[in-house]
Length: 614
Image (tube, rainbow, N blue to C red; front, side, top):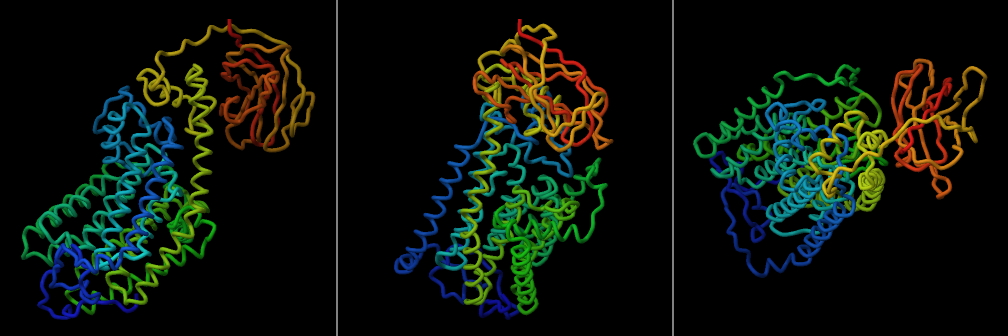
């Protein structure tokens, strides 16, 4: 990219306004960036045949990966909420109103105004099914991959095998956190809007009245998409102001850009009205930590499998972006008539850089903070931008080298990313399937929350309340439940029990000692009983290491069951000290296991009371 191409007449100060790219495969390569020529929309037949093999390969790649993406959601998507989804349950079920207060509500540093406004009707249209938004996310990514393919072909004038980079980068299973997560549409929307703005700038379609309005709307909506949109918008707003000034003689172009930029600035400012910094903002943020996390994000730009190539892959991506940026600056400096177009590329590159460093600052407080798979998608537009810049401005050899390098990298990561996506989906589905099975079996919400909260939501009691809301509305996991299951009538009983085993425990007359991270004691009942709950009176002292995470497991050994970390357990988190806690079971059991805490310390089981079904 050190040597950039420009059209033969761009050195002339009187060069005319460039026309939008429509189809250019009939033009000589040197004229693809011509400021004075508009390509007709019909290609000569002999050139249409020239790239037939390339078109077949690229389109086949897009079709196969699109089908694989849809198959992934079909196979692994579940009608159950996960983490941030639970925060939306009250409004989705009608327990709380859909209003402006909910739209403006903060989630850490984010305000997902547009995302919530779209998720609500998607939820209603799907009949209360969390998978509805997953399908929308899939279709958006498939459409984005196709749009990038189409624009790459227009810029080059013909298809190339390397164009398969776009579906390889956008449609792999490594984006699993975005694919089977209801609320993750929040992350996809700003990337879709940013990509639409980028493609409008790249093709020059913004230089028509309708194109200027479209570009302006995309940038205007970006700040409504949480911190990602807030970080992506400023460079694009600045570029629109410059473009509006450069095209000030053309009112249908200049005015939409200027007005949209002003509104986008106003929305960005209003975003911070009554803004509450998240708790993590009080943690120490350092320059090395920020740079490390930013580099981690760049490492996974080719997918989560890229984390294994830390830090070399991140350094390579960063270096490539810097080289492209320098080349664009040199082009804009040398050729006045290319300044608007080159600066548009630079604005998009700056926007993605700002996003990467924003993530680095926010998540650089601990090593690995930039590696979560949901960040992969946020970096893909930067790679796409580099690819398109290599087509439009790169010298023939160097440009092709960049294209091939990006294609090769994305192709090499396809299978590792697929394995990562499969592992994530199986992990998620193990809990979701167990939850759905227990819902179908009539296990009450309070018991479900106590069993599954550590895996899918960080608090048990709010999770139980939201399960009750979904049960009342017959949505989500309760969508196909005809009637609310009646809780069995129970009575308290003191049943004799005796210890039959232990792990990482040293027994003492006054206080037993837990010696590792998995201390537990196993007890047997005199016979198999239908147990509603087990109430324990116990003490735990972990040396002020924080709240004790106490678990009870159970099993019916006569049926060949084992203590199950997914289904046959319940957990409570309580301050250290003397406690009485009820663990909901609703099962037939003959053994139970007491895990006082996950940290070493002392404990004592004082009393056990069973609630038995009548």
